[in-house]
Picture (cartoon, rainbow, N blue to C red):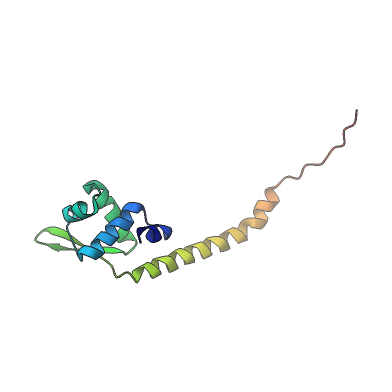
Length: 114
């Protein structure tokens, strides 16, 4: 399951934390560390990236951050966003290909005989 998540661009730690949060429902960083086996500092780093992707959110309860995984259907949105970025990149590259080709120097071939 985590291998499939890495195919859409999640790191191994992000995939493990996301699935851990799905199993827990919600949890504090310490709980995520205990259940996932990932060092606490790495948990915070991965959670930040997952929040940036919209896959994890948090609420503050008693001055403590309680993290929660987003609905797994959000993964399809992440894939669509990646596809759109790739499509835009492809269009940008297609537009500059003529300019790149113009930079290419064609060397004349010289026949040399002794």
